[in-house]
Length: 126
Image (cartoon, rainbow, N blue to C red; front, side, top):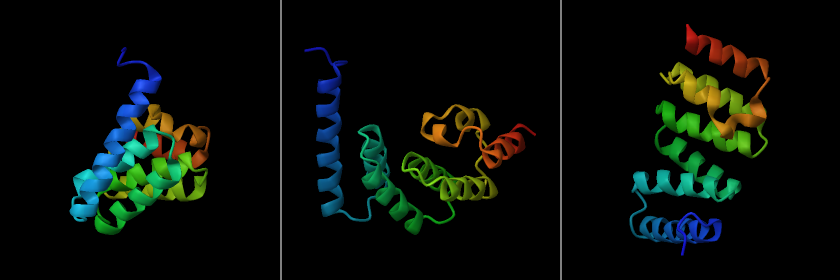
């Protein structure tokens, strides 16, 4: 078995989804598990579930710039461009400062060319 085989990788990711889902059922305040689960949903293309997990993380951690950035990524993947851009703007206001990551993040591909995104990237270069 080749661990890089896409089917085997997908099975591993699905196993981890089940693991973190069970963990959250037992320990609903385990936000690191919720963060991992949101990331796994995105990797699996389960964007609606990832978006729901990211929205819950924002509810629980409203002042965390990384949480807002991740929510923006989920929104962009879900086609919700205006809200994604709003959340990116908020993440910068809260201290997000990784311009190279934002400029190269494939989750934000749907926002490329948007003037608001370009303005944010320029702010991060200053």
